Image (cartoon, rainbow, N blue to C red; front, side, top):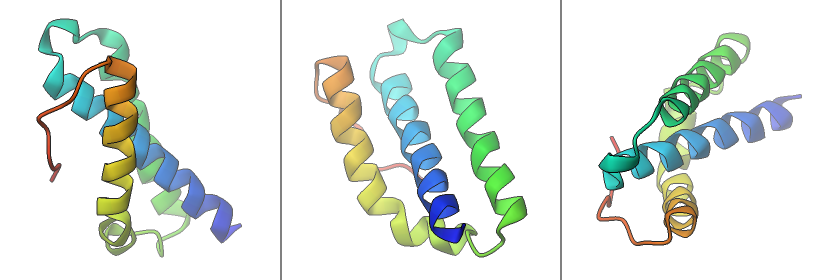
Length: 89
């Protein structure tokens, strides 16, 4: 179960990052869908963390850079352009 939860939380994190990168890169295309996806992803992370405290901020920090790299590549592919976003806090 823990492995499933860790994969799920990283999936939510990646999806959150993708949409934040897109939000910051393509301001003219911001819409309700992206905003809802950002909210949904945050909620998914918090829901898993409430059930599995071991998947806390430390777990996210440990996986942050690798997840960001994947998210940036995917966001750029979806947008069809490079993003100037080089980090997320």
